[in-house]
Image (cartoon, rainbow, N blue to C red; front, side):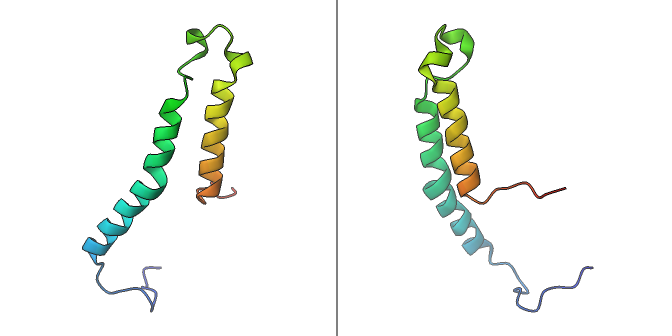
Length: 77
């Protein structure tokens, strides 16, 4: 079906779209990336006590929190 939803604008305001995407990037994505790169969790090869230090677990937990909290869920098959 290619019918347009009646409430959808006939023309996309690309300036507003870019502003909205840029604001979301700055507000939601950049701060998470900043926190992520602070974690010294490059690989278990860099830290023989990686499991004890928990950096890789912290990186995974951060990704889960952000991904789950941002509403980015894969649809059920």
